[in-house]
Length: 102
Length: 327
Image (cartoon, rainbow over all chains, first blue to last red; front, top):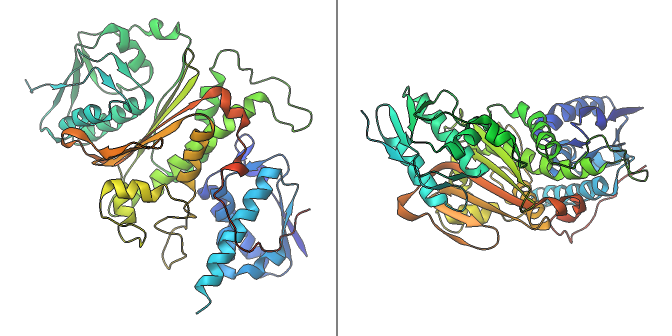
């Protein structure tokens, strides 16, 4: 089963920014993922800060490990959003692997 | 009558030492506060946020503030910027029209107390600042390729920078027993120079308190704490720990510095007894000045903002890249 979240709904103007906006959204995602299936983040017509993406995606990786990425789909990302997601995911996967390699 | 505290001729990032010294005297002196502003001729957003924070802290001690000798040339400006909330002005009648007739765009001093205010405030302040710049049309049609207007391209880097700085102040600044810390923000566009200036000042615990136990902090002093905080992936809470309210990737302040740099500008950062300018000047504040919290001044060129791409601001990453699903 696929769940969808339209990120644009949480934007002020064209930007989603604060961690405090992303944190409750991530809690919704964790509840949905706990029930199985996958989550689609729709980034149509919205830009995002690195902090927002880290609170949404980076914390999911730190809590559940890199395998959680297989259940996440990033839709309609601008080049900037895509680059930020790639950076956050790579950095947090690296951190998770180092922390769990002992 | 209380002994007056004299404000210097300039309250600004450029004159941070003397500006903060005057604020220190106001905060530390007992009884009601009398401010002699007869020398004051210039205040930038950094200075206004600093004054706003200082006046708030003095008033929170139950002390009244009176300001005397304010020159009419700056009285209307500071009044318009809302610096003198609940402050008695002696022998000075602000001439509000003086300021309104000038073409520089300014946004009033704003105080934030809750993290949940950050996104809305960053957007509102950025839109107000950019929207008040002469010749910038908020209702211009969007670019057909990108869907963004020229207005959007000016607003977003400012919104991004303000959001990061405000959220940092209301999270990191509130550790170590500073749970009631606030953040003050002011901004202005200077038409003649084409510069945008932001001032973001908090009265929280400061960088050194948040980074005190960080393994990358080589010396326990305020200047080292600023330099450490500016390095990517340095944060007091990069890891998930039990009881932590949130994590941080340690990239936010670095990104704000790079926004300023890409827009032909810089950050001036003050915390404790140290000042650092991202063009490379670092030193202790002169005269024993000390700011409890963090005070940041941002300056950048308006005409360089539309060219900023957020992806270009990220720190380099050379490690393995996980498989991601984009549609």
